[in-house]
Length: 229
Ligand code: SF4
Image (tube, rainbow, N blue to C red; front, side, top):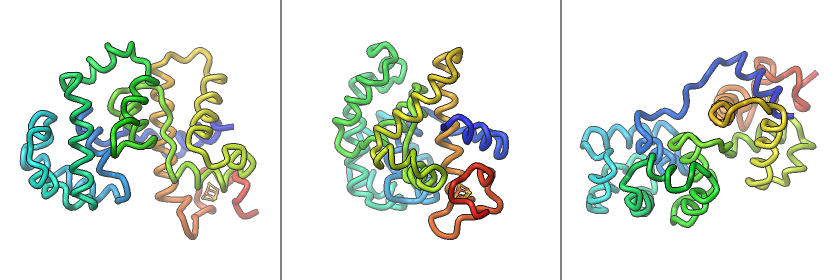
């Protein structure tokens, strides 16, 4: 159900090389900052953090709230997001700011890490899963508004089956991939989840737009229930 559109998109659009970010920490910061704003605004905030040499976990953790808020102003909700970054860093410091230690302590099992992340104020399911998949390279599929919009149009029955619930849709995608890619290693599965989410974001930005989708140019038009005949 999900594997075919994934393969079609990958063939048509090519690999996405996600997530944009030089380090695991930069990806974590991006996952917090991207909430309720465009990626362009996040890029400005990341640039400002880099320029001030603040994109380092310990430096940012010790930074005054007001200074951090100022540096990330372009990402919007900057006071709230500065608090959320400090909340995330409180958790991250328990592991010496080391992704390897997180993985070691939890045996690379995404579930207990997800539970810890979701207990942090400012981290919802999409942010937690973005950190798991893109910062920690764990096999987790990230669901977002683009995913829901695409599925509503591409396969309304599957969309209804998910009921619009985050976890249900995530399970549908993950179990479809796992049941059909039985020989794939965990590393390969992680790569597929990473890529499928990235491709759906690209699809949503360039073809399956909120208004006036460009169905005639869309790589999925031959299989989409909503494409004009
Ligand atoms: S054919 Fe149209 S509605 Fe279907 S996925 Fe593509 S852009 Fe979206």
